[in-house]
Image 1 (cartoon, rainbow, N blue to C red):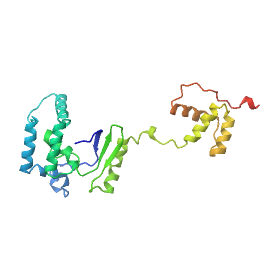
Image 2 (cartoon, helix red, strand yellow; image 1 turned 30 degrees about the horizontal axis):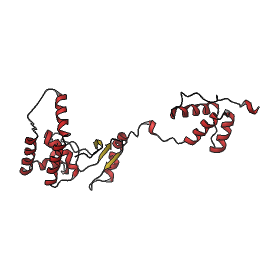
Image 3 (cartoon, one colour; image 1 turned 180 degrees about the vertical axis):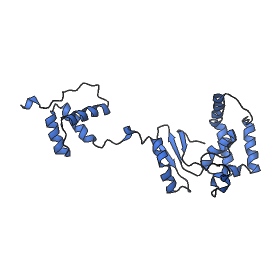
Length: 233
């Protein structure tokens, strides 16, 4: 059963899918473990008992897709049903990562999930904190291959999440402008502190961009940026 606080689980390792008649040539059969389990009469008897107890009728069909989805979701979120499936998992000495697959089988008769149970998965909680779940079978190659998917889920391709490499320089420019220093003065001081040669356009753009990034662009400036500070003439 999904632990409290987990809102989303992303399975990162896909199971091989049969392609025509070539599926029999697959050498690795680890992904067939769920299917093999369903061949066990004792397991099937336990599953049937659970389905009967919770009125899960696999033959029941409806043309209303939303209604079907709603019914499936209600089963998936049923605490008592989850507990029963968890007891089933323990009885057959299966690891925790089997729980979701067992729920899919009990509710939807899904014998071959699109993901590999022993593979990588990413858990995202209500605070949007992420946890990468590994198993004893996880390899470095598998993590490397899944990394683009992980970055996508973490939003790492979003430019807004890029680090602000010159924050303190930009902050100093903003503070100097607030203090009433001229662009010439700011340019000279920034060059001394950071070694950056910034002209009039650069400083105006950086100061304006800083205000937008920190959310104060609509607040009037204390002092208007000028090329020369008249107080020093």
